[in-house]
Image 1 (tube, rainbow, N blue to C red):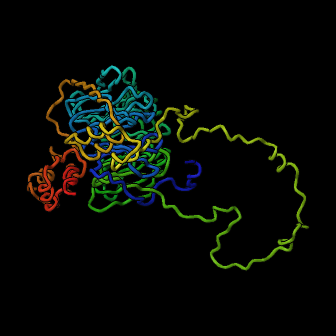
Image 2: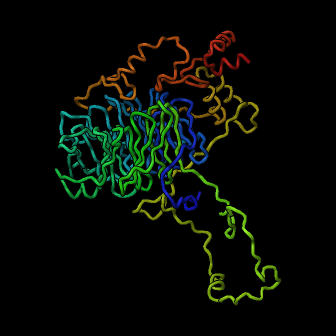
Image 3: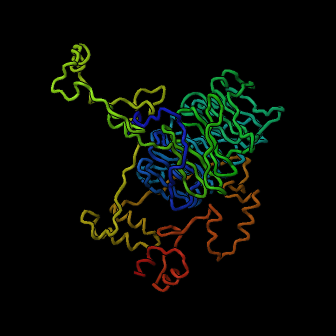
Length: 538
């Protein structure tokens, strides 16, 4: 699709809701690839659902983890995904095949994973109550990054736009800038409130274009800095933020903040409700507040890399926010005019003459000269939005779209399918969901997948009993009450806990039932049926 034709020539931020993406299971986190053509969504049943964002359809489902997926990141070329789950495991996935390349087990829960922007062999991991760790995937080695205070290990970290530096921030407001290759300290400063008190750093986010980055802090203020100024100030510098963004009326705390694709706008999701606040970075003025369904809590926000579209997650559903598309019929013909009211038409004298006598002689320079020019229709110019400022060409190996294989309902009637013995073996395999059966039968006999290499990451002095904040067990009185107070056989209360995996047709959690009687009983009870029970009922 030609991005130039999608240019809005007006404000470049979304204005209204534009539908939802329902992943069947509850969505927890989402991220766009570098071009915005694919959206990866991590779910609470451990699946990664990859959406084709142009068709708004599911392109692939990867059964990634057993526990909820809490963080996702695309590699630069789009061929790999790195994911973290609440059981402290970090995995790298091949997007085309859906296979796991490597796994790493950490002693504490993972808050964030991020690929190096230019080197997909390195991954930055932020474990809870630990210094950030940089993994090297090729040799499964890791480096623990230096921290400012060994007693304060509530550290968040992020690569800068090109991956030359790593920015870390702790609970005392101290920002360290480390050289990525050597881990040497290059610059540092402290984020302070007006009374010189320190405030905890919640997240650090970089713009895709330009040198700006933002810091989300516990004092409910989003500070925007220029990375070049930070490096110029050096160690223990005192840089002034370009902008301070906050909700002065409601004093809203921010769950997730990010830049727009062009770096001109900043969106922040409220931690209290499903509301998105959009500011203009250059001026610092609030331009739009997008309100979702009342009573829902926001989990994640992602801005499309090249278009004014935002994806937000609340109550397990991905909401899409976009601009209002107004139909302009006058765009179909250059001499077409839209009239608000009837206008009396005045006919020109020579309008219906065979030859126009009043027509002036055309100048020979412009039209004839243009006819002699050769128009190049073979070479393809790179799309500027897909290239970085230091690149001239697009990545020829980039994975922009996923091929979608057609689902075959009855494999025996497929003349171009696999041999009958392969179908039979796949159908007799018990304990597999109908979705997996269909996939294996349509793809033909597959070689046994080799088990991915699991590497245990040893971190000294890190507590092993930490619980991921997404699960909300520690320090969350509300969730404790809900878990303790819900009876085991309660109906209709499944929606209360957004992190409880749903059971549905083809889910791994649903066990196959034996006998039509059990299927009937379960159907009467209103419980979900598995593929085996449905076939026996029919």
